[in-house]
Image 1 (spheres, rainbow, N blue to C red):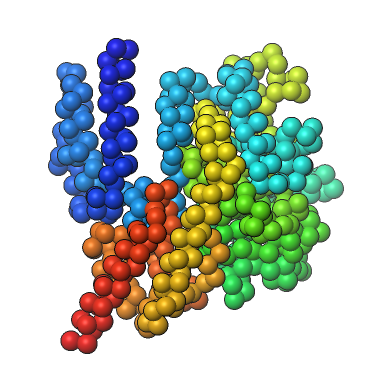
Image 2: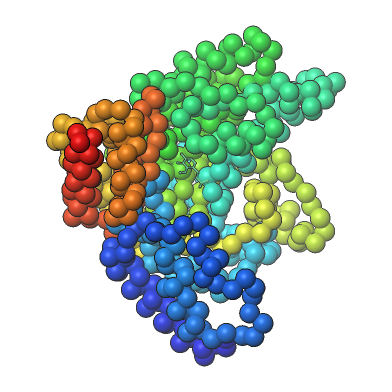
Length: 480
Ligand code: PLP
């Protein structure tokens, strides 16, 4: 494909994408395919001879679309949102064109510097303490990770390294394996599985802290378990708090947990993968109070801030805790400005070496929407969640299972888990709306998350009518 054809195909692709998104609600949100469906539709080997573009685009409809779960459909209410907006998609196209791999400042100065500034912009929108902001000449700063899982893992590994060095500085005779055996980390029993996984990858013990009636961890709960572990000779070193848990969007009490972590020399990481974006709205910002005690903080603009995947924003209070933990300097990656003190080499902040120019997406979206536009998006989605909550509450056959604070409603039919499992099966089979379940206090619960940028009140109303229709059928069936 040469530049002339690229111009033509590129314009066609923009039309294809706009048509796809504008007409998405007419497609079933959930695919009707069996495992292995795709292998039977395409050859088992790559073509020897070049093929033509039209054939490929025909196959997008024939092969790909039947197997897509349409995350951008206004009838998609599963998991949490996968953010999407036109400016982000355009910026991604430009990122692909520039095609730089910005692992160091020299590898593309604009890629590094825009990232630092965008993370500072976002930190200021969130009113993060100055200690997290790079441009304040403090010791902190931000980085774009691929996912919240990577941010959690990085924080855990940095905390592990810091703890080992601290202990060896007073007990030089202690070997690293001896210390690692005693290190213990903590997280909520409600935290995302990626936190437990970080513990497994990091090779350290991870204990689950029980939650209160709102599914949140309190300071007292953590303190109790830490005290017990210290008495048993263990060394507590890390706690991962969650603001906006995956199951029910609960908020750990970080203003109580922070002082416990600080007193015990434990790193506190705050995972706000979904809910963190909402803290740009002053009415939600109090939920972030206590962040001043944290060592690191993460949220996913690729969930709720209109920036397409992947874009996970992470800040640390002391950037040297991260950089110092994993620094290696092969000659081929060194550059003449790296000691200037003015440059960041993001390769030290993450697990992979290579990295895309993801801050372009943030820059385009922040400028096209402005802070007010982003706040309006969050508020609209929270409003839709409240609307759905009222519909559920008005129907006495159902119950709401957790406080609706943001864009997630946890609800169930009053009755057995089996009844609710059957309702979800019917919903999934219908392919008109898509939800996923969770467990709360032993109950099987349906999660309804407002996801798509294009979801409106009429979609919510239709989704509820659909759920009540299927409920009616289910209850009729159970009488027969
Ligand atoms: N943390 C929380 C609270 C989440 O809800 C999720 C995903 O929904 C994650 C972490 C994992 O996010 P990622 O896919 O960015 O690793």
